[in-house]
Length: 139
Image (tube, rainbow, N blue to C red; front, side, top):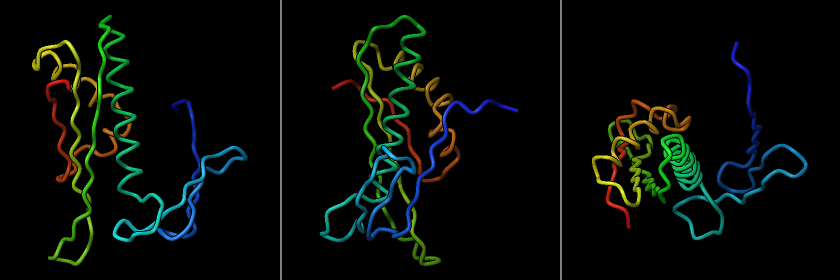
């Protein structure tokens, strides 16, 4: 059995019309709102993007450190909500762009490929038809 390194318990009782929170006394609380409304708040698209960008960039930084490369890195994630008209259901189209300063594109692609295999969120999304991971020049 594998050791649990960390566990988060998150509660949402209101869908996209209320509050979601991490279930502990000092836990994060976020107001949720429908992504196509004008109401303030966050939504699953933004939360997925934040989780994926943070996890992937943290993993890239860990790979760079392991390889003794001191470089800045940045990850952007675009999450689009789309309608599948064939069955009237929704899905996310996700594009992650990773960039590493001071490396050739080929070197950066190698680091990103290693990180993609190690990142827990990337592992969770692996195999999704609507997921694209790109390595792009640093800017």
